[in-house]
Length: 220
Image (cartoon, rainbow, N blue to C red; front, side, top):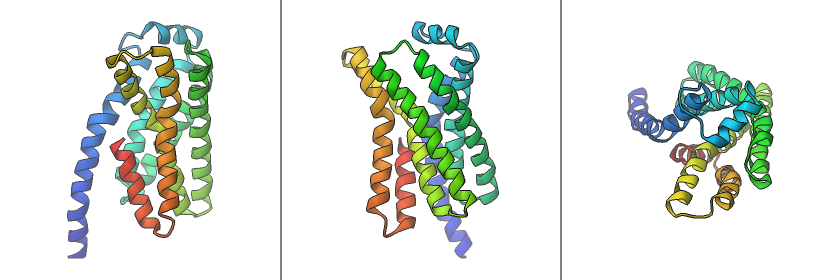
């Protein structure tokens, strides 16, 4: 009876996670993969970056798009240890490739120096959190591993928030360069800051902290 009741509680969460992935994560990831695979025409600014980095740029777009998908699936499958571990390894590989290639892509970007620094910083933090999460699980600290992976997912969600922020800036006819520079930092710093804040406020109840932070990321 207990297993049935737990399954009954998990089913609505799984449905909600699936809807969020379909509505937010999947379109962003699919667009990145399509642009990296040359299935969609690149905007002029991205076309210039691809010309500078014909290998690193497509790899960055495809790996980062796949990372979004695998991170979301890994989070949704947290109660299925074997599947969670397999998806987590795929997500880690994609984050590693996406993060490493993000660094030269950021420097080759036609954006201003502030935006370049924002994208470069995002790549560095993404990689640092991944490495720390791997070290934590190797040491057997599953709780710290979960916190770090949630923080890493918050940084990954910056790709979603960046597109939403730019769409809003265009809709409101805000200065594009200033909006782009602000979004390059805010899109990943704000989600990461909120996750870290939740981690501190819920230090007395680790299970509650995990679920609150994960729910926040899935809504991103």
